[in-house]
Length: 376
Image 1 (cartoon, rainbow, N blue to C red):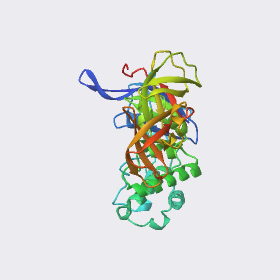
Image 2: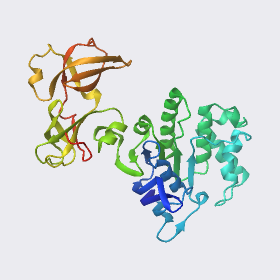
Image 3: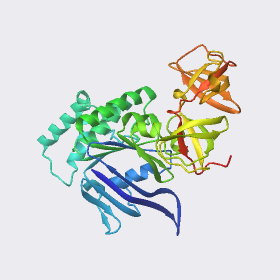
Image 4: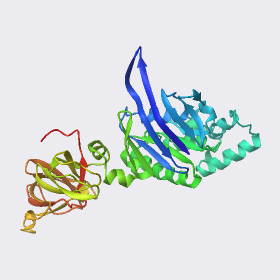
């Protein structure tokens, strides 16, 4: 449905380029897929979305939508935004407060240049879309009288009424409070699947990206650093940035003594001692690496529960420095040697100052090649 090839957008100030934009971004999105561009502010995700929409003209590259070239720097092709058969939902919703809910949704049909709609067609399409969005009862109401969640659904209805092949969403939930955002997240995913529209979603919220997406493209400094399913980017991050940006991780800098092949285990010499890790990708001997494990994958037990455990593989002696009750879980900060390890477990009886044994399961401890790591 969408192909982006070597997309580059450079912003100029006088005769020199300035920070921002995107660099050689390429990806494909299948029909019906929910594809998310995830990254911090300024990473280039919104610039990429606006280039797909036709609101930004890239410096280089090519964009195809549904088999049609809408931008190609090599040939000079550039199709205007209103001729790309897309729907777009903005962060601010951009509903027109002086119009009714019905007229807001009807507006794209009445203004369409690619197809003429009769009033009976407009009414049928608008009523069907409002029914789908749960807004039929508010059709005659002013858009300004809607709640934040209702305005968000109205913005979606207006984007979908013309049955676009591609739906672009630029952080549409960021203005909602936490509870409503979670509710709308589930509703948005359900609607996208029911309608079958291909969606490109931009967000900096990791939870949104993991909950909504079929695939996630993690962006940093104008480039894509990893693409994968939510489980792939969470459990097997490509580098330290992805590991720390998506969720929370314990990271131990270290080195390996031998070459490591993909999908094998090796010992990482770290600040807390030798750690057996599972490497998804290859890594050369003496190369800086990270031993990475999520807090929920560690196992914590009182030191006297298994006297010999501290001598086993990936078992380390430590002391609880802090305990934080988080409701469903308890977060323990455990000091091992001079390193703090974060462990999340169901509520238990362990208290601050207790001596404990920490287990890093080798199959859950990921070895990540880390060329940028400082020498240890």
